[in-house]
Amino acid sequence: MAKRENPNLIPKKFRNLGKTFTENLTNKENPYFLPFPRDLSFYGKEKDEEVILVVRSHWIKYLPFVAVSFLILCFPFIFAFLDTTFSENMVLFLAFFIPCLTLSLSVIVYAFIRWFYNVNIITDKRIIDLDFTSVVSHSLSEARLEKIEDITHKQLGFVGSLFDVGTVYFQTAGATPEIEFNTIGRPRVIQDILYDLLDSKKKGEI
Image 1 (cartoon, helix red, strand yellow):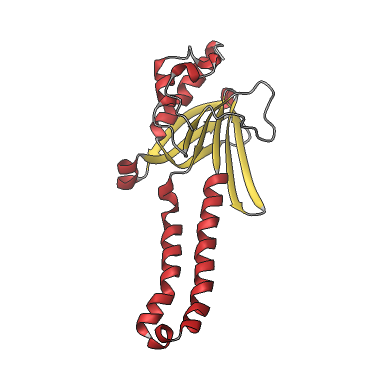
Image 2 (tube, helix red, strand yellow):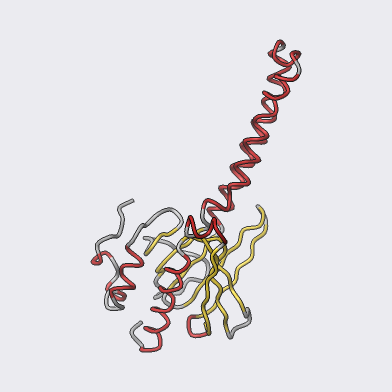
């Protein structure tokens, strides 16, 4: 996908919101930071509602899943090293290896599904936090921009500082008093984007 580094690719509605807003959205587009996605729709999306940014959790959040998957895949080789019966009997080895491979791939697929469907969406009208918890359940929190009272972010210690990962907290006056964008990349940038949007909303620019 071509990167939106050209400000002219930003919809007209948002081109006058300031240089900082434009730079924050056109810098370093990646799978977990996707500005102005084309043809994105979701349940309840209003006809004139523009999606400004889709944010997914940083890959570092899913390292434990990768580690578990790798460990499961290593089990047959560990047993083969400790017990020559496994290494000498290919049928026995495969009978143990194939279930471990299946389980290992299942962990990776589950992690990918969680990453793909756990999304945070910023539009010109609201913020949305969609959390996928299992194949059959999810939770959704949202707040209109005019209901947001405060925005803060917190980086996750040394690892957060190293990879620029953190959580953005939104205090709202709605039914959900606090909404969180958890373990996301560039939390300060996202905070700045929201402040620019709120300021433009108050001025009636959007």
